[in-house]
Image (tube, rainbow, N blue to C red):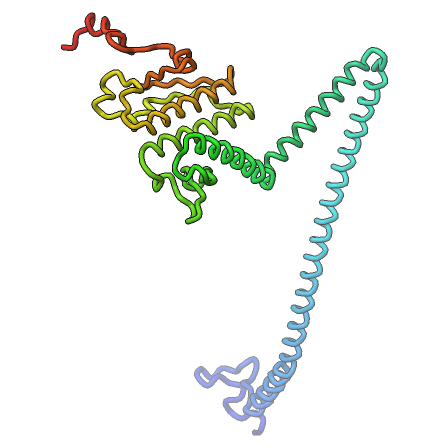
Length: 321
């Protein structure tokens, strides 16, 4: 377009001359081409920038991990130094204590304190023996052995008493069953429990045999059990019910075999009390009044006629309303 062409240097609205002429179409294309080139350059460089950014981030992550490792190592070193400082303090305290002990021992006069040292050695020996005894008591095998030994001792005594009283199955082995807490007899047919053995006479006899055997064991082995046994009317199964209310003499028993058995009951009691005297006492409240001297000598109170366990004067002074 030739120079001076209208509209190039003047405003199309007011017609005034422009300081800078409007760009031509060619100029605009040129500028557009430059912008396009710059944009292509930016798009070409962008992937490299992203790759570089990723590499920087990965390196930063590795550095952070290395930093955490270094911080952990520093923490461990600090703890070790603290422990070493504590150990040094403990060693110094131990050394100080040893020094005090050595100084104290150096001031002891061994000639005057030899008796005291001997007593200390004796106390140590006694304490060690006590510890060994307690350890043996806690040993399950020792406990089982002691239990078996005790039950065997009781079984021997019970069997001997049952044979003396001529109880049913008394000629067999009689023993205690700890699981069922009852008396059993080992017969040819098997184990027979007390509930399956005969009558009330056998029940009384076996209870007496078991109680006496237990107290014999307690006394013999100095066990912490009260040294007395109280029985109330052990001969009741042998007396007729109407005679029990009367005098209850041996003559009231009509069967000779029962008379002999009643005598054996008291003979066994008398023998055991005599054997364990003065460490055992039996108190028996019964209707029986045997004529034997050993029996009569054992009687302390004979409540017959108007003599009773509870004096009648108590009832006279305090009548029932």
